[in-house]
Length: 330
Ligand SMILES: [Fe+2]
Image (cartoon, rainbow, N blue to C red; front, side, top):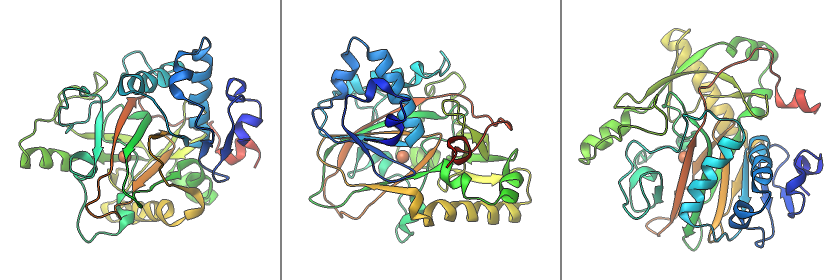
């Protein structure tokens, strides 16, 4: 059984077989008869979904096998996880700035496809695969809490996704380096989506899940170390795709420190989990406490899925909060 369920925190989920994928990140509900569609409609669905949100926030990413979840329910699920775990009323579901409108699904669904769109917008030929590590949409003033991806079309082999733990990345820094980073703030920027939109004749989506996420300004300033509102743990909150500058440092200092932190996430494979998808599997992750990256190793094969991204709260740092290891006594 998964450790955080076993610890008795999440009683309503103990009825479903689950196992942890690694000590630091990732839990899988192993039985395909565990269906999110049933949890959504259970008489005690609020309790189960609140526990699921807490599990995702504890473990970073949670996997469900062979799901019959429909897109409309995937959107409902994304919103309820956040609402039941305390996000502000004004936060809804994200609309990606360059989401090509897919009328049958609506703008809150990002179609993740090997054939084009956001999954391909930032692919640069010849770059190291590790260049792709990111948390979703951190360029927004109010970034994401939870994201849900269902992959329905898979290549014969390949197309794995990797996640890394921001809690563990923080916990592994030296005490002196932790103190140095706490209280610093960083710029997150996605002007490359503006460039992509211009080049492809798309219009940037005006309102994106919060009254604060609007217009063509795809820039935000967030704490380098943030406190997770659900678990209370400190987590690293800079990522290679969107974080461009630590404001309190000189440009050279900032570049070197960020480089170190990006390598810290990408090169410590013992704080990561790699998931090999099965058809219709669903991953739910917490964008506040994890990073992830796609694996583009499947050439021109078809790989497609649907993603819903929920908007959380404005990131903050509480200096009285603890790291995960300290809080759990690990
Ligand atoms: Fe992503």
